[in-house]
Image 1: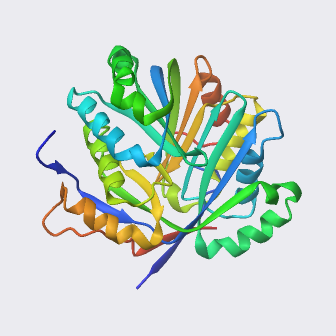
Image 2: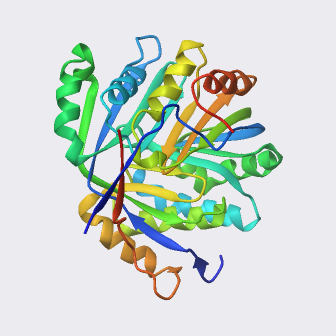
Length: 165
Length: 168
């Protein structure tokens, strides 16, 4: 049996807006048929204790899965070697490492079930002319990736429309 | 690779429709217009993923299938917006948690997803879960496939939430 609960909040509450800097973004366009091989390569990279901060993927162009992967910048050298591996190059139609980049993220109650949160965040950034490289919303989390020196401005812009502790 | 990867659970979503919008950055941003329109009309997007590069931007947006008729009516009023949207009906998300930001775990999940033969329409990590979008009809098959390769608590089986929150 399904139970439906109703939720209402005057100002959208967050559990806090966080900013992380000196990050490294790897973007790779891969053929979906090579997903298993690339996953295997990433798993092997992860055995070296490399941690990711965020991974997003979708078909940026038809037939090409764009993976956007964020890491701490301390892993950059390891990532450069990883991207140069023949198996990774072979799986990728396009691969680029961008650093430093910045990430802003926030979470909130029942975000996955509530309308308007992504729109409000996107609108607040657009109003201040702050462009992002990537955005992801899943479950109760909202993430943005920015070029250097934009995340603090974005935090200020979002702070004016979201309620923070 | 570790012999056994552990997870606390696998969660499946309700049926959704995936909408794709691709645009040039030089034009009026249809992704932003779409987000605004959905918010104004109280239509939830349980999953979305947007990326920009050079002069182009592309995003995917999931809407519960039960909300699609209403979304289409709203979109039709958005003049040029309606012509920019591509619809992929009947998708769903499979969320494995927690990922603990562990690249080995996430890499194995991607590899298993690739091996399962199910299409990967989208993927995003949240603070806890790795959520992957695939065909709705394949969700349980994929969940069973992942379950065979991940150690789950003894009494766990992939589940769908039985409580839903509606925002007024």
